[in-house]
Length: 179
Length: 179
DNA sequence: GAGCAGGTGAACACTCATGTTCACAACGGT
DNA sequence: ACCGTTGTGAACATGAGTGTTCACCTGCTC
Image (cartoon, rainbow over all chains, first blue to last red; front, side, top):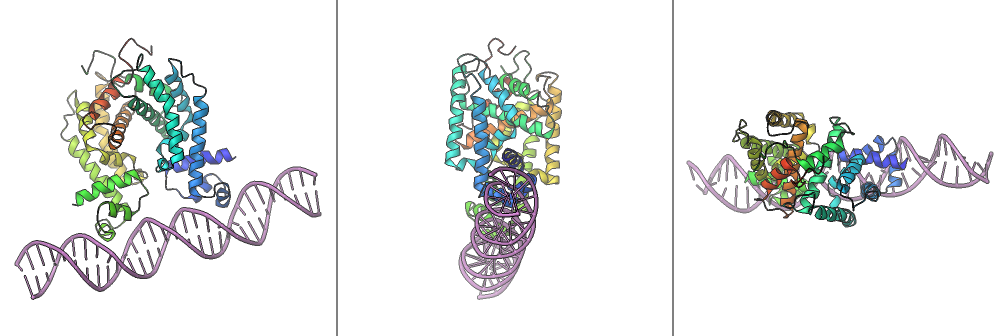
């Protein structure tokens, strides 16, 4: 039940970051008093949502074999399934000003950056910085989540879309069109 | 001078969408009263910023030959130069609830979507919907703007990064790694 | 049935962004 | 020198979101 509360808070706050606590409580089908009892302040609620999202990501990352060559594909596929939770973590305005959260996010990025750097020896092109590749990965995920929540993209199609686009780009595979 | 005010408002509101009008006024080096005189309400200010960004985009789009095969490349290069203004237009929370603005944005997307659809006969792959390609394009631009404002990416490098990534992807051009 | 934990609505005080008004200063054109 | 324009700070009223308290209800355990 508390889980559902965090999920609802995620959606509501993501759709409108200025939503009042009354809005969140109502959307969760719960009294505002109850919400305040669980999360004394608005900041506490936001941090709880973000922290929960971080836990989700870590639990997913733990299942990925970062030594494998398909680690990135695996990671992306699993992250797509997490949906808006991760989006909240990386998009909610002002979240980066919580130094503890920001540190945990950087810590979360590090192994992925290392993986990217390593793969740049083999399957990834070397003329782009690792951080740019990571941002591109995130961007693909954002696109998928947004499209899914809009109902334009079927969840099962999402991983393929993201992976294809990020790795191979949107240009046709034909004769080099950008020599 | 009014131009500079809108630019400042764009940056401030983009960095923190909940920034108060005092913050905006102070950042612009102007009295809050003056700000209120020019834009009677907060909503008016936001709409002015967005509307100004739309004008910028239209003025840029008018210089692009949509019949050319390099139209997308040209468009991206010019949009990168516009910086945060466009970002504001596509990212500011709640902007889509202003129906007039939303309509103008859709109207702005249409010719680009048509262009993408047309290019899918030649230089663009056909197994991705046009709207997905457009979103990918936007995502690349966002990445560039963010990286530039963080000081991680040189503005002159940005167009190449975006175009390379979006069109060719981040995988090495070697033997097919995703058969 | 007593007691208790969890949830609820109502009410309250407080803070803060907002919008408005007003009197005053700086400036440029006539 | 006069006046209209433009900008400014100060002050005020208002409304909304927030945090807190309290009395009350429900369901459960002993």
